[in-house]
Image 1 (tube, one colour):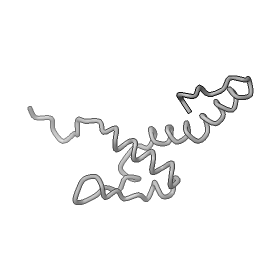
Image 2 (image 1 turned 45 degrees about the vertical axis):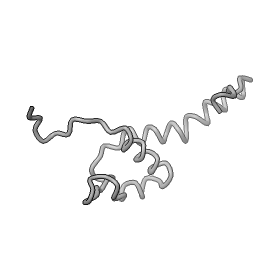
Image 3 (image 1 turned 135 degrees about the vertical axis):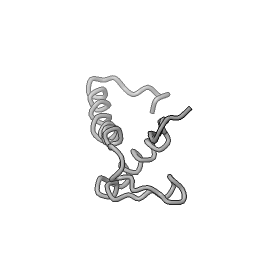
Image 4 (image 1 turned 90 degrees about the horizontal axis):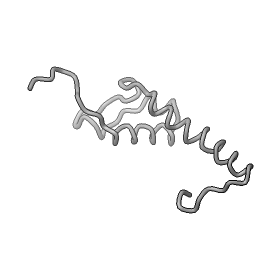
Length: 85
């Protein structure tokens, strides 16, 4: 089978690492990030070769939405279940 030049796979591990890097280092570092762990031995300039929508959404959910959600739940008296926290 000939699939052409398009990569037909989804790499959740890479997307997780990219979101984690954005969360830990911020947007400026993410934009300039050159990842040596992918496309060995060449590496990849991640910030300029991906669409960062998923990573930005994941970091926003983690930093902005989750504290608001659990703060609201605590305010109304619903605590976080022990098996979640």
